[in-house]
Amino acid sequence: MLVDVVRPTGPYRLRLMARRGTWRGALPGERVATAFQRPDGRVVVRAPDEEGLSTARFMLALDDDTTAFHERFARDPLLGPSARALRGYRTLRLATVTQATVRAICGQLIEARRARAIEREIARLCGETVVTREALRRLSPVELRRLGLAQHRASVLVRLAATIDLERLRGYPSSVVDDRLSRERGIGAWSVGVIALEGLGRYDRGLVGDLSLVKLHAALTGRWVEGWETAELLEPYGEWQGLAGEVLVLGWARGLVRGASTDLARVARRRARRAA
Image (cartoon, rainbow, N blue to C red; front, side):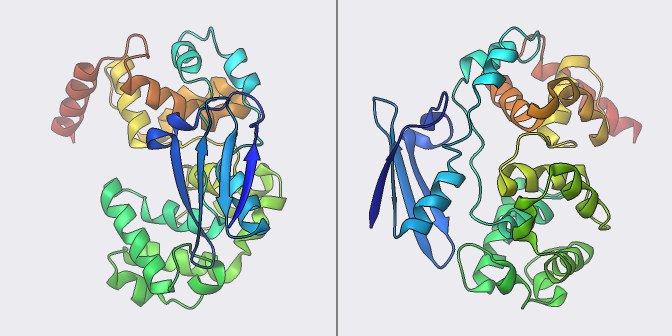
């Protein structure tokens, strides 16, 4: 087991992303990496080999400086309190783009816990903790359907694995990735956002349509919106939309988003259900 002691670039608080400040991440090949943050701010990373250490650094976002985000939006009327309180938060990532793609497809329009359960079952069927493109290409839509994935989503996942070298997407600009993925039927803005944040390690694409953002929008306005309308919340944050969305949701859970009322969100949802 190799050890690397890393001083993160910019503000970094692992405790905001991992319980008790201790992280454990799955690597390809049934390997595991771990990390914890010292009181002096340095992060101790352990992995089986150099490749594992490099992958763990990416998964922990240790080399991404988010100083500009926190400084730029510290006084933003909506995001400001959360950006100040959650300084040092970064989105944790998955080891492969393929795994992030599986998560994006599984998470479409179903309860989060059920989606993660299906994701784990797909990994089990692939015979590995972290799904790789090679393993995913061996599965059929019928096999995925048996795990509880809807037929059309199973077909989308198999088609993506067969037609796109998902890992190579990290080498392309976000606009190119967006264009390529959006041409696939069954891939929307939310799925692209998941792949960008958790697979590519980018902050310029938010989770448009995420239920948490829908609820936050309702808590602010008293109106239940369609998923695509949540883009209004993220648009002001430009190239930081992905990180802004996560910080907003976390801040709301901590009571840091001014004017956001959970009761107002509940009323808005009841009205939407009655009108449906």
